[in-house]
Amino acid sequence: MNNHVEVYCGSGKGKTTLAMGGALLASVQGKSVMIIQFLKGQERREFDFLEHLDGQDIRIFRFEKLYGSYEDLSGRAREEEDQNILNAMNFARKVIITQECDLLVLDEVLGLLDLGIIKEEDIRNLLKFRKGSMHIVLTGRSFPKDMMDCVDRVTTLDTVETGSA
Image 1 (cartoon, rainbow, N blue to C red):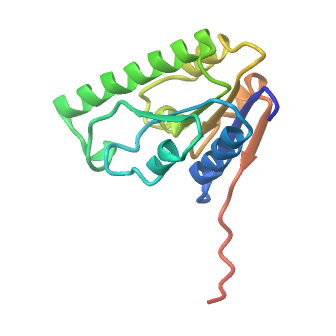
Image 2 (image 1 turned 60 degrees about the horizontal axis):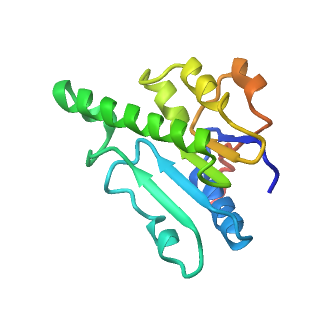
């Protein structure tokens, strides 16, 4: 595992799965892994099993309390979730500053940009704390082209309909 910042984005499915596969591989190689999931709420817990694998150092964090889609929230509920998300961003900053793990996955953090919860500058500020020993993965549907200078690799997953059964 190289120590750099990597992005998995695009309209296709599999961005989180790709990041989780990398997390599992890193863990098997003796690396410590932390995963912070955004916009997944409490019902999307399909990768929780990773925390329970014998001998693996994988920890998953979710700060949001919602059940259902963020876009369906209104008023006070949205304000509360925004605060939970900002708490998660602060936690991510702490993890990066303290070098608390070898691999940090910020799953669906780019979706926060799409929803206007955070700005590009927030991600830039977060990444500036990274030291050479930590690998960071960002996932989400879209990645702003003007942020290419703060990452090392962008992998785009797109779905192509073939028309066949």
